[in-house]
Amino acid sequence: MKISWESPSNIALIKYWGKKDIQLPSNPSISFTLSECKTTTEVHFSKGRGVNITLDGLDKPEFIPKIESYLERIIHRHPWLSSYNLQIKTSNSFPHSSGIASSASGMSALSLCIVDFAQKLNFKFDALNFYQEASILSRLGSGSASRSIYGGIAVWGNSPSLKGSNDEYAIKYPGLINPIFEDYHDVVLLVDVGEKSVTSTIGHALMNNHPFGKQRFSQAHKHLNEIQEILKTGDIENFIRLTELEALTLHGLMMSSSPNYILMKPNTLKIIEEIREFRSESELPLSFTLDAGANVHVLFPGSAKKKAMEFINSNLIQYCKENRFILDQVGSGPKRLTNFVK
Ligand code: PMV
Image 1 (cartoon, rainbow, N blue to C red):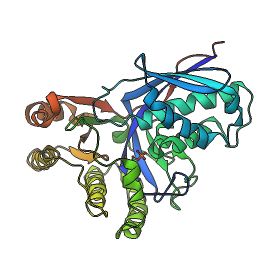
Image 2 (cartoon, helix red, strand yellow; image 1 turned 180 degrees about the vertical axis):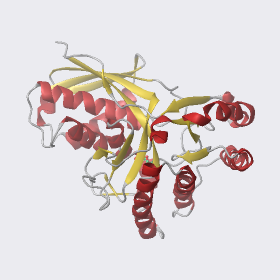
Image 3 (tube, rainbow, N blue to C red; image 1 turned 135 degrees about the horizontal axis):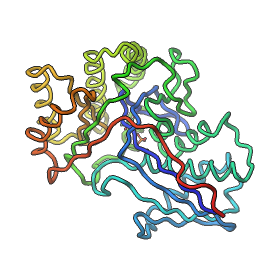
């Protein structure tokens, strides 16, 4: 019995950084779901017990411990898993060595397969619906994966300003969205494609005793309030101000953790400077955001695409490893690829 899903990555505009209990966020976050950066996963469920996994057709025994600890984390919600063997075949649309985290797309694709199969078994899960349950399981695999379950814009983490928002699962952003944000582009500039010196798991943990932790968590709440007005009115100027502040705050938190660390590289800063200079000269609404790494996400609306791409090709690709970048945009969310095959 095989089930297959394709699920995208996402890029946070207001960042989740810091967690408590079992994968619950210290503050709410909001993201664009991407379209091109995605994982395709097929799971063959058979009676028995155990896991094996291939990536692009190659056995990956080194991934098994991570999958097993994820399964341990979700088994209380899905006890049927204890009598099934999972043969997982997975592949990413983005190059393996791109430095792009595959955890959001990978964990959401796997979780969707599991919830889909549970539904076929007529298993009654605890959440209200299929997507909520898939988002909870994704969260238990990797926090940001909880948001990849929905197309467009997704919110994870409780905010009094957003009805239905929740620490346990993400929701599709329920507010009004100006059409400009439905056609937003994200060019991921691959500055550094190696392993990160400090993982996100360690980074989140360092937020527990962070000297600015409390202020940061309340700032994120304030930013989530602010972005709702921006998304509604299409106020690009404030979108740029707020999302760049979020990106640099994330890295500022890393630089002020104990121990402190820096994930940006010299080329990350060069790109940021070029973007800011180009923006002030051209008045084109081009901006950047960062995730927990050295790569830069260049954001712009569809209307600026031609000029933005010219600028990226002429000025920015020199800072990328082997001139590599990924052209992406806001996408419509995960897709089921197969019907239930027995
Ligand atoms: O999902 P994790 O544990 O890999 O954390 C991701 C954290 C950021 O990408 C930096 C921010 C976010 O909200 O996605």
